[in-house]
Image 1 (cartoon, helix red, strand yellow):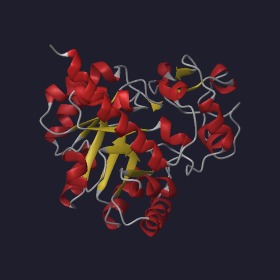
Image 2: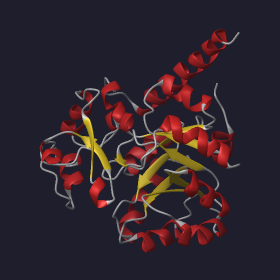
Image 3: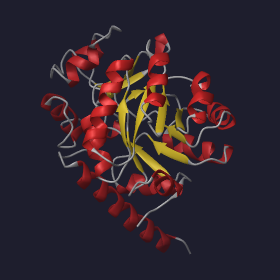
Length: 300
């Protein structure tokens, strides 16, 4: 069985994180993934402090396993939620869409293991100096906010640049990609798109169906000219793109997958069925073990 410093240190069964997807990664999904052996993450997204506190407490009622919170640094409530994770005793915080430097000292002093998402070597080095426990190197294949580098290029460069653990994200959907992440030097993976179709995921069925029907070229990046590129599945919204609040919510929660933003990564076309979260994790790592064993036959 694949085991690394990530699962051993954080008390997990598998070295896998569920992505902190806005309007998707609520307490119920985080708890299910944690109960299944991974690290479930609650998305703080644009929640205020008390909204996040309620989700954290709900998650505590649903699982006694480790879970974490993903804090989107662009949120107008980032300062509030940065205090709430300390007050509620959250053990792991991941961050996205920015530099968490202003919060790092107080989080680490509170005993929180901070694991920033990084799209570049420069930010990876900076986060290591500030005391990050590990890093999530996320390639542009992922859904949501994306960087320029692909996972294949980014992960090994970050691994070479830092001495702390690196978790690979972006374009990871099955055991072959998990195995590839380990071959690149990562010691864990973060998966988002495949958990969209976990049976326990509470998003609208229309959103899930949109992911399940996606073809290989159906994802598109919008927002580059505004400096905040986002990957989602092509629909009427992406064709008549205008930046506005609430477009992800109406897709994820109301099921309007025509006019809402259907965030998903490039691996959406590889997702073929809804499954329990536990089955997703076990299937991915069972296949990864077989791939890694089989890789030896190609080395002479």
